[in-house]
Length: 386
Image (cartoon, rainbow, N blue to C red; front, side, top):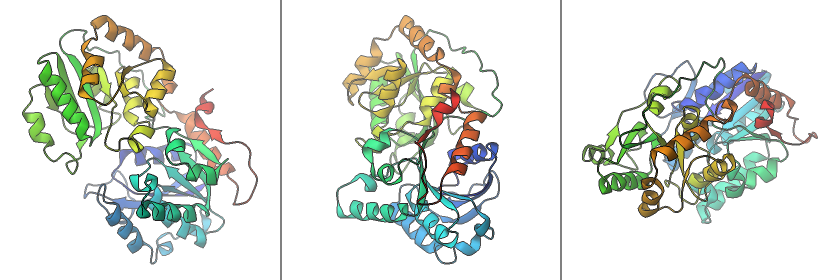
């Protein structure tokens, strides 16, 4: 299978994980998209332009600039079987390529629901109209969370039943033995907040939690702080001895080290409260649980629904510092041990994707019909593990 993968952020490690997954399933992948930094890429890719994090207007302008002569940048376009477009702006480009290569199947990959897609104002209605027009060219939908069905039903309704759920799990093509946890059940309760650190509410709450009980909690943060959302991030951390920022990390290489040092994995995100933050299943759920950390979640969110179903984790009743303190302050060493055992009892495939899921994904892509052809019920990648 020849495949073009259009992406919105070539610096995102999850994109390279998806490329690895597609190749492991047997696809030949050409990667193209926009870059948000000047950092070297893991391997060559077709760079269509440069964008900035969170700036939708600037990203839309970059897409418009890429349209003239777009098809000429893909010399093997006519031999392409599948075009995957990751997120909305790439779907617009994918629809253009699809018109030049009508035999190719266009697949929309929905990993986030931008606030403009879920709003009620004129701009949101215009964006949804653009999405609806582009969806007319699409054959299928890849998505990472069932919560998106509730938050943004349009693509699910238009592309059903050609739907494929593929969660944000780490990928292990040749899984190694997981290291036994060595973090002792003593000292302060260790909380890990990792990944893209963009939630000011989380920083405010964890800062207040640690200051209210000095020495009882310690928060370690790893990843990339979004300084456009939390411009005083480094100053806040430096001013609190129970907050520590350990810099960026590389997954999966650094995950053992990161999660060995913590008891709890902070999964609460209020960056887009009531919208995308409540609907997604973050990769820190899978990374943390795979390495034995106990998830801390907010009631009513999609990730809380998942942990409730699995019978794991600590649930905070409402988004307030008081509720966080109530949920965490009473945890004993016996509670921590019991919660750890509940996480460890889940099959490894709950948290990690392997070769079977790679093959299932590419098989689903290969079986997609051209527009208008009948197809059987939707595919769910979790079933590939059974």
